[in-house]
Image 1: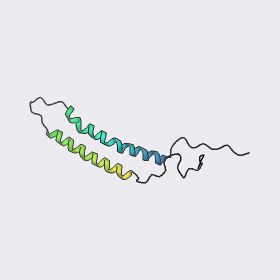
Image 2 (image 1 turned 180 degrees about the vertical axis):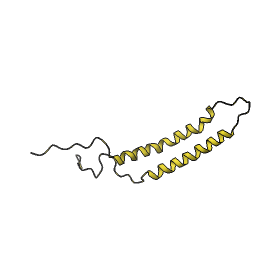
Image 3 (image 1 turned 135 degrees about the vertical axis):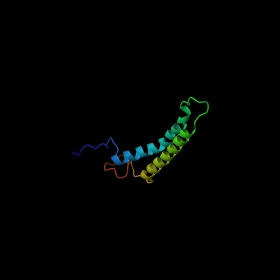
Image 4 (image 1 turned 135 degrees about the horizontal axis):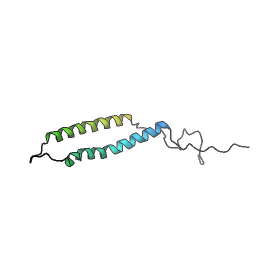
Length: 99
């Protein structure tokens, strides 16, 4: 009697899971950047009539530099080649129907 067919694993491999989270982080980085760039608009003005723009300028420069550094780190960790992270990958030990 033949053993029952094995079902594919429920979870992705650890490396492919991390690769997908890196892609998600790369997609979310511009949204976070827009929020951080617009944040000085929400800051309360000082007690004077003229707004002091020096802290805002420093903040925007620091946010800009941090966003560039994060984009560089995320882009280096991303693989350009898709290494078959789906359950139906070619290196799957259990062939599915119709393969």
